[in-house]
Length: 633
Image (tube, one colour):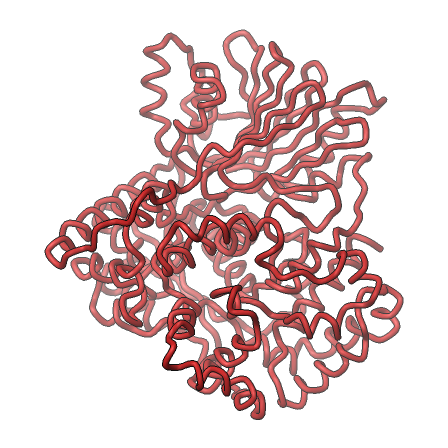
C-alpha cells in the first residue's frame, strides 16, 4: 500500500521539479511511512510513498522496465500478480523484484491499454511511457483506492492519491466548487468526478486516464454488464447451488487477500459481514487470527458482546477499545485527513479502530460492502414498502404526523425509524431510495442557501437530473427494482462514501485495509441474480445469510442490524456544543456568504432543546466551516 503523486509538464515551467515532487510526497507520508522514491524523466515527475507489504526488502518504488523507458508508481494490491508474473516470465519479461508493482508494469508492456482488465484487486497505477511520451493511470473497478487529478492552464497534468498532494504543487489554485458543496450538504459525500475544488477531479472507478500531447482522455474499462434479457425465475431447488457458488467465491476472495509478508488481522463488529470474513480466515488457516472491535460507553451504541461471541467461536486473539467522547480533539485531525468535506459520523470509530489495529498489524481485512451488495440497509426496505399501492393513504399522511413530535434519545427505535420513513415522502418518488439518504430537501435548501450560492449553482436541480446520477438512473432501468437500487448505491454511496471513509481513516494510521466482499467477481455474480434473492420479503441479505449458515452461529446471522455509528446528536449537545456554536457563529457565516444564518440558528436552537434531531445538517455545516478555514482562508 502506498501513496502516489506526480505531474507531467507540457513545457518548462521554471520549477525545481524534484523539490516540488518531494513536497507533494511529504503530504502523503502517512500513506507510506516506510520509503519514498522519485522518477524524473523527460517532462515527467512521479513520486511514491511506500507502506511495505509484499517483497519488503526489494519493492522500492518507482520501478522501471529493463531499459528504463517505462516507469511506474503504484498504490494498492494486485492479488493475482503471481499468476500474471508467470505468464510474463514465459513471454520473456525480466523481473528484478517479487512485487505486484513490477507485474503491473510488465502487464502494460505486454497487453497495452487492455492491461487493466488482467488485474484483480484494489489499485491505482500511474505509468510513464517515455517512448510514447504518454502517461497512463488506471483505477480499480470498484474504486477502492483513490486518485485525484487536475490540468493547469498550460495543459500540464497534476495528480495524487489525496488532494493535499495536488495542492502542494505551486501552480494549483484552491477554489471552491459550489456543485460539490451542494452534493456534500445533500448526501454527506461528494460523488466522482467532482471534488470540493474547482477543476480538480476524481478519476472515476473502473477508468483509465491517458495523457498525451497535453490531451486528456478518460475511458471506462469495466462496468457491470447490463442484463440482456429477463432471467428465468429462480427455483427453490436452485438455491443450494447458488449459495455454494457464493460461498466458494467469498472464500477465494478472502484467501487472495490473506497474501502478505507482514502481520494481518480483521475488523470484527459481530455483524454478519465482518463475522463472515473472520470465519473464512479461520477456515483458511489464519494463525494467529487477530481481531479488533470498538465500543461505546453509551450502551445503546455498543455491539461488543456480538463481536465477543464471534471471537470466542473462532478462537481469535481479540482486542477491544471503548471510545471516550473526545470528539473535540479528534475532529480537526480527521477533517485534515479527509481533505474535503465528508459528513459520515462513522469516521470516528473507523479511525480509532484502525489506530488500535495498527499497533498490532499492518494489514486488516474488513467486511465493508456487504450492505450495498446484499441489500442490508433499511432504505431498501423503505423503498419496497413505498411501492405498495395499498399503503398510499398511510404514506400521504405520515409526514404531517411524524413531524409533530420530537425524536427519542435512542440510537434507533421504532419511532425514530418511522419519522425518517415519513420524512422521505416529502421528496419526489422519482428519487427512489435516495429519499432516505438525503439530508436537505429542495425547500430546506431555499431556506439555507444564500442567493449568491443558488446563482452559482445555476438554480437548484433534482439529484437524479444531475451528473453523475442521471446516467446511473438511466442504467437502473435495465435491472429489476431491487437490483436497480443496489446498482445506484454501488456506483455512488459505496465508492464515494464507504470506501473513502475506510481508505482515508485507515491510511491516516498507515494501515492497509482490504475488502474481500467487493471483489469484482463476487459483484458480477451477485448482479447476475434477481434482487429478490437479496431482499426477500423484508429480510435483508437473504442469500448471504443462507450461504453463511454453514459457517456462523445462528444468532449472528439473524440478529438485527445496528450500524457502525456514534452518538453524534448527544455530542453536539455536550462536548461538541461549544465548537459548534463558535464555528457556526453569525459573523463568520454571514461574511462567508454561502448560507442564511437565521436558518442555521433555528436548527441549532431546535437541536439543543431536543425538539428535533438536526445532527446530520449541523455536523455537515460544522465540517464544512472547519474545512473552509483550513483550505480557503
